[in-house]
Image (cartoon, rainbow, N blue to C red; front, top):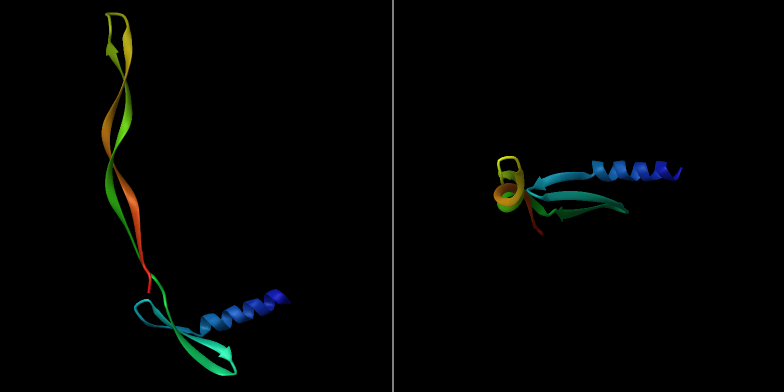
Length: 89
């Protein structure tokens, strides 16, 4: 019974919203009569930037005619990192 009431209230609240501008919504709340409020949502921008990191490299190097000696080094690698900027209303 409780979930039915919550579902009905959610359906009414979603139906009472309309977009009035960029990041702005007009919301009608059920009271004695109808109240209308304007709600501003934050602006979210998502992108990527490129960073350079050092990654390990493992290889072999001739030590003698018969033996290959293991060698560890590093190399520069570019990776893309996600960025998020949020502007509050």
